[in-house]
Length: 62
Image (cartoon, rainbow, N blue to C red; front, side, top):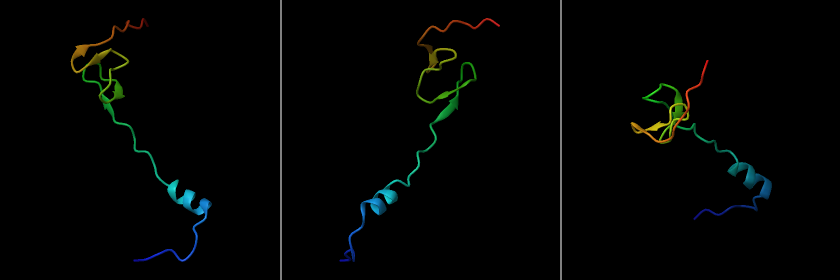
C-alpha cells in the first residue's frame, strides 16, 4: 500500500480542501405568476405552492 513520503503541512492540506464550489440553487419559473423562485418553496410574489395559496400576498399598486 502506498504511504506518504513526508508530512503534508496544514496549509497545503487546507488549500486542497478549500477548492470546491457550491452548485447553483434550483431556480424555476412559478407556474402561477411566472416569476422566478426557488424550487420546492412558496412563491414570494403570489404566495402559491403546488397549486394552493399558502400565504396571502397583497397586490402591489402601480
